[in-house]
Length: 341
Ligand code: SF4
Ligand code: SF4
Image (tube, rainbow, N blue to C red; front, side, top):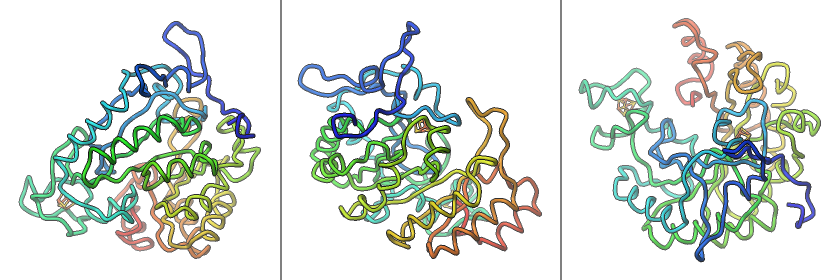
């Protein structure tokens, strides 16, 4: 980032001996002619319904990180780009739903299945079932029932600021797989125009961009870095023909309606068709004293974001703000099944 004229990330990763190193040194290495990445795990994930590769090490240190055990600490096993591409090729053999490129996104998984497993276990559909898939497409994975879509996502810690690894692994995945889409789940910090050009040539298809705050001061306090490249990312991504979805977390007293509105407006100005998820915060890591938003706050956030003109909006982490059947009825009456992520 510094070489490209930006500021460094907040990326000091704690090693097993207690010392610290930047994530791109602690969890990334070039050996025997190829890049290796420290990986916590990889498997078919729910509710995403795709292969997720959970990476150790990150260029952010977010107070509310839900993956801090491996994003902030050296934690995992080394995988070369050859090994990762081979694992993706193996996963491709198990795919049950072939998505077109424009659906290479997390948010659209909920259109197909709500993961109750009833069609397989009981021969009938669950109450929230979108009724799109036959039971033969539903498989059991480490995180439950659902389809297996032809998407591989890099998730967990993010070192897209060091583009070389993602370029090499994307090229190998595209060489070894017939029709796997490559999605990067990212905080957007490393998505400089120069890196995006390289990801485009390497075959990356889509991004799930987590915009954590609009106000640079809030962002810095929450994540430890500048959000300059993050806020520029939606336009830069769409300009290059990638597929994009955006998410933001509703964090009471930090990122509330006003912030969410500014983020949604920025996204809507780029393209109103970009799907947008509002996720409910839950207390974790350095924000254990925080609280989740309640149903009314989430519904207000939904209507505020909708007023910006964005067409596809979902509310996620429902368990944090829907506590009773009455809550669920109110939620469904306002946002419908399609508004639940
Ligand atoms: S960007 Fe994501 S993985 Fe990295 S510290 Fe923040 S929440 Fe954790
Ligand atoms: S497709 Fe099957 S597992 Fe998925 S929501 Fe419908 S009934 Fe449940």
